[in-house]
Structures are given as C-alpha cells and as structure tokens.
Image (cartoon, rainbow over all chains, first blue to last red; front, side):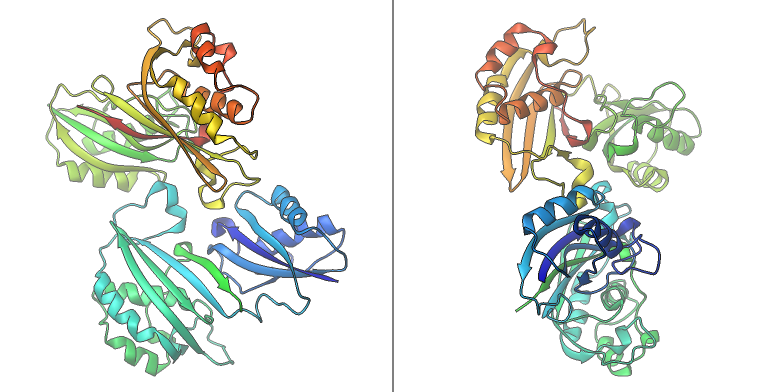
Length: 246
Length: 246
C-alpha cells in the first residue's frame, strides 16, 4: 500500500466543483479519478483537502490517494497530465506516509478573491475575476475585515443551513490590495465553512460600496444569522491558493 | 469630421484574426465595427495598426476611425465595451488630429511570444502560450537572436510568398527571459512582415532545441528563402503588446 499526495491546479469554469456527484463525471475529482484509474487499472478514490464549489478555481488544491502498488511519483504526474483536459494540471506528486490525509491533516488554507471594479474585466484573466463594475472603498473594507480576524463563530457566514457541527473558525489574516481597478482579497485561516469566503467577499463588497458600515461586522458575527450577512459573491472570482500542513 | 484613436485588448483564440473578411464577422475588426456602427447609427470603418492572424492576441492593438460627428471618447469606450463580447475590450479612446492613421503613422511595434517548455501549460494562461513541452537552450537562442537585430532583409522570415514590396525591416531588440519552464520572447521593431514573429519564434526554438546553430542565422538572412527558416510557431503564443507613435 502506498499513499500519494498530489498538488493540483484547475480553472473551475466548466466544472461542477471538486467533489464527485453520483454518476456525473463533470467534477475535478471525477476527472482525476478517471485518469488515475486508467493508469492503475482499477478504481481509485482521491481525497481532496476540501470541496471547491462549481466554478471555483485552484492554484494549489491538495489531494491524496492510496493504491496497492508502488508507482514513481513523476510517472503519475506525467501520465495524469497527459490525459487530463487542459484546464486541470497536476503540479506535483509525492509519496507520503500511509496515515496522511489531505483533509484531516490540513492545518490551514489560503484563498484569493479577485474583484474587477472597472467597467470591463481584463480579457486575459476574465474567468478568474468577479466583474463588479463599481468602485470600492478599500480602506473601509480593510477596517471591516479586521473584525473578522481571529477566532469567532462564523455561523453568519455559513452557506449550509443544516450545519450541525461547530461553526467556529480562526481567520489568521485578511489582506486586501488594489492594483488600478482590480481589488484582491487574500484570506488565510485554519479552515472555512461552506461558501464562507464568498459570503465574506460579498459582505466586504457591501462595506466597500457603503451600504454596510465596517463596525457592523461585530454585530454580524454576534447575531449568528446567515440572512444578516452580505450576498454570496460569484464563484468565478474565488481561487483556492494553497493548503498548509505541519 | 472627428478622428478617434482606440487602444484594444483581445484574446484572439476564437476569432479569425483582426481583419474583416467578406461577409463573416468573426474577426475583431468586424465585431468592433458592428458595435460602433450601432452606436453611430451607420456604417463605420476602423483602421488597425496592422492585421493580427487568427488566434493571435493583443494587449495594445491600436485602431482609428473617422465619424461625421462629435462623440465623447469615454462614452465610446463605455458603449463599445458594454456590447462587445468579454474577450475584446477597449482600454482607451481619444480624439486625434484628422490626419492620424494607426497603420501609416505607426513607428514601431512590440510583440511577445510565450513558450511553455514543461510538460503541460499553466491552466490559467494556457490560451496565451505555445505548449512546446521540450527544454530550450535559452543562451543559444539569445546568441541567434542577436544576429537578427538591426536592419536586414527579412525575406527568409516572410510568410507571404507573393510579397512584392520591400522585405527590409529593423528589429530594435529581441530579449528572451525564462521564468521556471516558461520562455518569453520580446521583440520590438519598426514593423513586421506577415508571420515574421512566428517564423522568428519557430527558428529560435529550433536553435534552442539544438537542431540549428546560432551562427547559421547570418546565412539564413543572406539566403532570402522562407524554406530555409524554421517553422511558423503557433498563433496562440503570440501577443501584440504595443504600437508606438511619434
């Protein structure tokens, strides 16, 4: 038995997200499993560090899979890249201890959310941006973001209404930078709830547009009600940048 | 009568190049003229600084058009961007003297050619790169490129067999840089023949692969025979970066 860890990059535009869904194979997981299964000559299950929603991208998704024979990591990378479509790429494969699990062992993640505030998106990176088309007060957004940093109950920012488990998470850092008309949010934390980054992005955008005050974020955390937070910003602006392990 | 100068960006992947061809409107020029004509309420012709081939991209194509009434440049930009597809964008529109012509007045151009030497292209910029998938000796390519700089007869690098006019051009600079597995050619000159950059790229790639010596470029220029040069590198790796005027 061998355990392999894989780092993947994908443009999520035409996929139904990371996680395999029933019989459809229009997911990243489904596509990778299909190619890996062909290489190995039998079914294989890959475990992602977490689901990414339909349309969300990744620069550094991590997944692992256990197979009953020894393969050269470089040969896995080469084979899988050759047969995967051109919007999914394996960056690296390595052998890891059998007990490694990409989701259970993840210590943190970093996400990037890109917002174009100008009238039209840059044609070359349009699939990676949310085209807001309105100016944002980035300083107000930074003030609001500061209230979210630290350990809080993020129930107001959870897209799963039936969430039974703890909604307490730690956000280590939210940095927001502006390059001409592009506003980029960088968010790092120990883990994120369903659609949490997109709801944070939507809420911070409302602050940037002036329809919500930075101070109101304290109340928003306290109320623990998804209805009180901002809208869920579109999937296309979101990218899973990296997953961290010990 | 007013003359307007427009700077455009486009991802050429799904277009039949810049120049309008008969009845098809699947060209950049055709698309822009269609939208502009709707704004103005009558036919309009836009003059590009030069044709880009099918599949070639632009970060700074320049075009001008003359209309019989006065329009606010910002309103032209806004209107055209609103109705153009998301892979064509107007970066700027300004009024210029009536005698300005984007092609006839162009003093120089800069092109970028991107080559991925690794096994698979970066998923996010895959449409802007040529996926060579083989290592290149960049130092040898630089040596070869040096022979092309200056004023020469570039007949060996001209894709138009029936070219009647002068094939003498001046290349001001070819710089080649490498970032991990990506090799990028930057070529600036006073003007370029049909497919000239792509034939230069193909020839330099052959040097980089070791199938052609850097020194042989001198003979290649002297022989004035397209058959002796390298292959025409694919359109998708090429981008018109900028057009220069006095």
